[in-house]
Length: 397
Image (cartoon, rainbow, N blue to C red; front, top):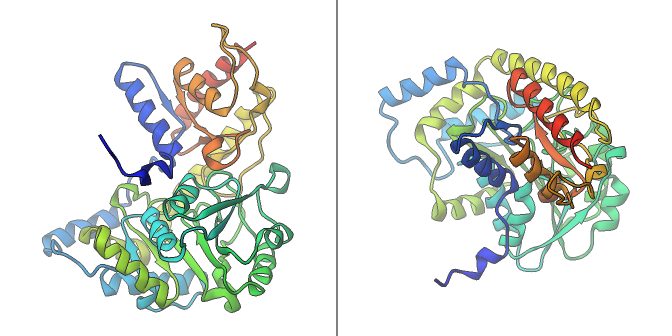
């Protein structure tokens, strides 16, 4: 069978690949502990579900405008003003089937063949692959665990050239949990001021999973705001992963371009999800705050458990719900059958098949010395999973 060469430009997401393998192993009867997926294990808050039920009864069962209902886009604008101090109009908002589609829309609207896109490592697995899908060139800038996995202004300045079209990053970051301070963002903004051809995609989907302080957006700097594409959504803060609703805020020209693209791919996202979004964006944040406190407890547990495993370097993540430890001290060690653990991919497959714990290799995130471990699971499963990881790693020679 002949398939499009487009499929050779990009890879399957490592996160989804490991989740799929874990499900297959579980279906065969194995007791698999899932520490791979970035999905809150909480149910959607009741007031949001009630809004969705009402929307069904009120017959919100028809096509909606491609960019979303006007009142939902206004609710996004109100949220951005209230929580972030950012001024946007509904014409600058596009609703999509998750933040992932927002990112794809933005990249496809901006990046031409051979345009360069700067992405600091580690990064969410989809960033690089969407750029390749668009025909762009991925330019990775390596950060370090010692620097909190954050790019510096001098690194950014050195990476930009006349072909640079876009900069992509997240704060809080998936997978490292890194959170940029206002001062750090201000320093990056000073660099961007000197390079007006460069757009900035700021992925803020983990905005409310922040343990150390107030969320800061790079869109707050007026001199570059017109070039910022702010990405957010409902999945993480409101435990609404399956509802598939993300949104972007950007200048009107980019919003119109993304609406045009989306009109050919999916049209609008689900009408019921959009009505529920109003309740999420305007209602109480108490369920989110309770969820954050639970994640805080789990983070403390995970950091305590990882310290019990020798040879692993791990920093405390200030945001998101992952740890991203350096596990390179286990590369070169042998399993009981004599096979060698060559890299993070091998280690994750070993943990999956021998320990029955699913994690994600750092290779897909641009940091091959690391693995991502999610604590978006119950404390019981976290403790169970780490006990199995500790035992499996101790058996390597």
